[in-house]
Image (cartoon, each protein chain N blue to C red):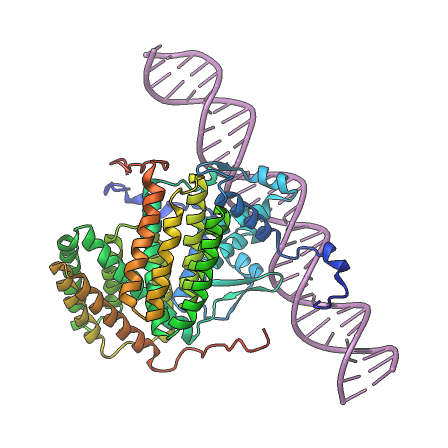
Length: 237
Length: 237
DNA sequence: CCTCTGTCGATTGTCGACATTCTGACCGAG
DNA sequence: CTCGGTCAGAATGTCGACAATCGACAGAGG
């Protein structure tokens, strides 16, 4: 397979993953990219015919997405893209702070501070370069890698799983907001002090800076009342 | 339902939830209670015939459990109960600490300290009563409610979801260990100072005590090498 | 003796059809 | 006009059957 002399088969490489996985990936991409908007109905028959498959794998894909929280399945009533309220956004960023500060404390306990700081510094530079060119998509992409690197350094698979979840939600939030932060330079600049603190092994300062950084991001997302106000669960329940 | 004069229909109360949900619950119960042991194969046909249903809802149930991390599904090869290694146990307790300390900080920010402390104190008393009677199952049950109450007070649905996950994993770990802690009285006693700190609104002290409490629990679980050593992902990959 | 290949049984993947449930429109009584 | 009841239409829930894939094993060939 690693034979560089036989690339002619690469084009006919077929996808051996189960259909449910391919469908789940496609639907997830549509949701997280904002193409499928929150509340939008997902009709099994439609999805099945769109992909040219039967409903069985579609249903299995929906179970996968439902448990990831991307889709809500109501028995006999149908499925729809999970709605996003203001409260959801607040909760995402609150949890994000908890996970990232935990990761920092943990990676410092593991003595990986210096090594991680090196990796992060590279990403910081990259981010600043992209920012200087006004290449926002690449900035957010690198930002994503920055935080993934941080989380991965904690070497905890459960944490990594939770982060995959949070990361997706953030991507959806940013996509729905569909407007670039004019002051993203500020956000980019925020990363450097964090790396400094990690390098210095100062857990207290690093967590403090991280919390502030995340809080800033959350404020930016919530500033212009874009997300639906919280649906009041009144006394009816 | 709440009419006490018509209990005669309770026995014929049928379950209107989809089969996948009922099956998923049954399988989850079997796994978390330790009845189905880690690594044990789950054959769709067997499960289907055991419940007297077709394979379709069983497969959907497996997708649900797979995304909760209870079951591993390998395409065309089958499903099995997720294996539990020593590292998994360590990770669970590490994350647990992060989630609980976050919850404490959060509920204090929300100003719910006094109210929550009251609820927790009741549970502490209950726990001590059960402990005095040597009723370990009830002790662990109340302990569970203690921590659920703590988490719920943070009023964050994502956190609550993660806790449901962690709580299940802990239950499985405890069940597999299947041996009561002789020094559980110590564990029970650990709760009171935490409540005191919450009542006093002292976040730093509360998180410190909580971390220590969880660390103690983790040590107890890991003390006797019951869980499989970590499967070394050698250079083969 | 080793390696490769073809076959076999078991299990999962997928499909199309039928059963059940929900929703909303229609309609007649009060 | 409002309130219930009825009824189709559409969507989901479930089923049984068939196809595809995997691992093991036996046998040919070197």
